[in-house]
Image 1: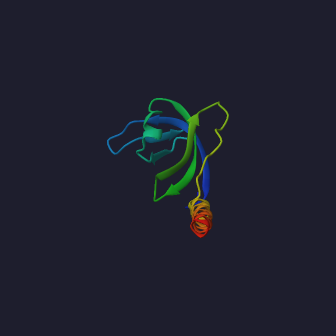
Image 2 (image 1 turned 135 degrees about the horizontal axis):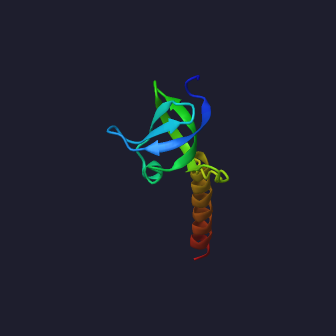
Image 3 (image 1 turned 60 degrees about the vertical axis):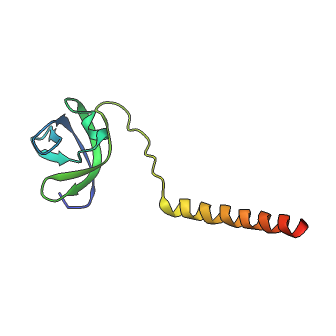
Length: 103
């Protein structure tokens, strides 16, 4: 499996000494991110989408119960937030300048 390619895995999340691991149906074992999102699925059969990291590490983008529909991903992109902030500041400055010119 190539490193840094998006991968879809299915298996059971188990607790281990170094954090949660995913035991896949094919017999592989992947060390998952130790996040709250992953820890709440310990002992459950899940589907995971993410990227391989290192030899057997796996960085989860999404995790959900196996057999359910994949949840829609919500990603807040920083560049959109910055653009919105600049537009809002520009409007604020324009309204402020108009009010001070009238007052």
